[in-house]
Amino acid sequence: MEQSGRVSIEEGVVVGTAGGRPLRADVFRPPGDLSNTPAILLVHGGGWRSGDRTQLRGYGVLLGRRGYLCVACEYRLLDEAPWPAQIHDVKTALRWMRANAEELRIDPDRIAIEGNSAGAHLALLAAGTAGVDFFEGDGDHAGVPTTVAAAIGVYTPALFWHTEPLRGGLPAIVLNTPDAEVARAASPLSHVTADYPPTLLIHGTADELVPVEASIVMFEKLREAGVPTELHLYADQAHGFDATPEYGRQCAAEMLLFLDRYVAGADQAARTAGRAAAV
Image (cartoon, rainbow, N blue to C red):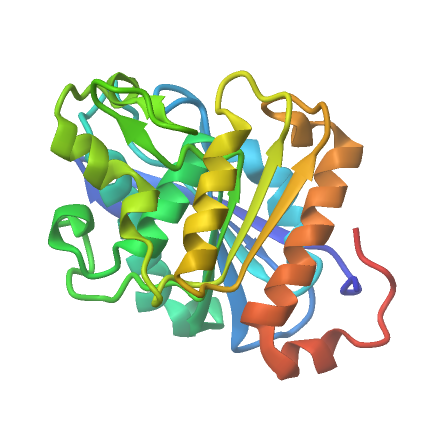
C-alpha cells in the first residue's frame, strides 16, 4: 500500500571512508512525517568489477513509497581494492545506518539488506557474518553491530568453489582468489545457522551468469537450519530480468510482502492500512 506524496532522494551522502576516499550512498526517504521506520540497505551488482549505487534506484523509490527508508550504497570494486574490501564497505554502510538511526528516523533493529547479483552475494554474506572480524573490517563506527532483520537476494551467487565444481557454485577466481579457504568463507552458504535472518530469494530459471541452482541450494540450506525462507523462481528469465519495469514492479511487490511480515511489524501495517495499492 502506497504512501501519499513523493519519495525524497538525497544523493552522494558520505557514509564512511575506505582506501583513503569517501564511501557514498543515496538515501531514499519515505513521504510523510514518519519516525522509527524500518529501513533497507540496497547493494548493487556488476560482477564485483562494475556497477554503481544508481542501479537500484527503482527499488529505492518503490520500497520508499511503502514507508521504508532505503540507502543505496557503493563499495570499492575489485579493480580498486582486493577481496574482502567489498564486504567491509557494505558493513560500513550498515554501521552508518545504525549509528545515525536517530537522524534518519529509523528503527536500528529493523534494518534489512537487499542486493542483486554480486550485491546479493554481499547482502547475504553480510546477513550471515555479523560480528565476524574478518568480514567486519576496520571502517568507520567500529563496534556498531551489523546484524540485519532480514535479507533479500536477487539472483544470488551463494557458493564458490576452488578446484572441484559444486552444484550452484561459481569458481572462486571471480573474486580474484585462488584460495580454497577464502572461497569457502566468501560463500554465504557457509554461514547459514539457525540464527540467520529471514530470507527471500528471487531467481530466473534461464540465468546463464549465476545458475538458478545457487538460489535453490541456499534455500535448501536455510530450510534445513529452520530459517524462514522463500524462493521465487521466474520461468525462462535471464540474469537481470527485473530491469524490465513489469518484472521490477513484481519483484518489489514480493519484497514488500516479505518485509511487511518479517521487518515492518504491526505498527507499520497499521500505518499503511487503507492507503492506495502500492507498486
